[in-house]
Length: 234
Image (tube, rainbow, N blue to C red; front, side):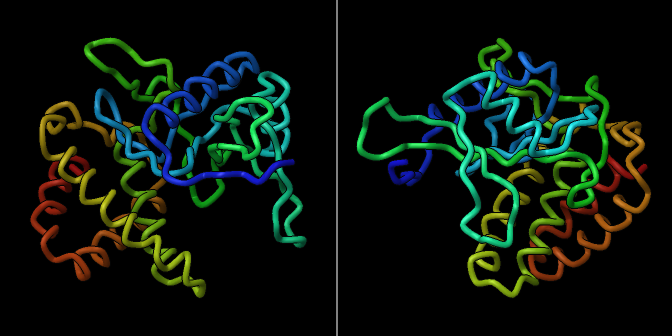
């Protein structure tokens, strides 16, 4: 296999990957929501990877990956570079056949329970829109569990033993600050009553603790968190 070239993913590349992923999931009768982006008619916060949670499926992560690859040959699996890991990594080929290098986007397949991700009903998914039209990419996770998961990632990366993981906390923090702006901007009225999602009390409780922790490191967000509590935690 030629070496995989990632570099910085452009939005068209991310959208192309996500659109193909949505089609492959539909062919497999699977439903999932992106958990690396924002929600409804907001430009996604997708970085270099696509993170998607597959809901309402009894399949494990590796079987889901295999089915996606079977549905679309542009997806392929690569063994982990760590010999102790038995899982394979899912990629989407963005290059042209026969090229010397392989331009590809990595996709992380997640399921509820992994990293404390809660199960969420499909009817709660938020679609992406552009110019009033629904995009062909997978829907997004509702913004409340999304921001709590972002806080969890920030906290985990900050306390990691590995330098590359520790460095990720800064990108997490930027995403969180952007999500706060979205939550308290034009989406504020639409977000009221989001507690109807009935998220697990332990998940929400851990999120509140991380909010306090984040506020200590980013005191400029304290007022935003207080306002957010009045929207979500009523």
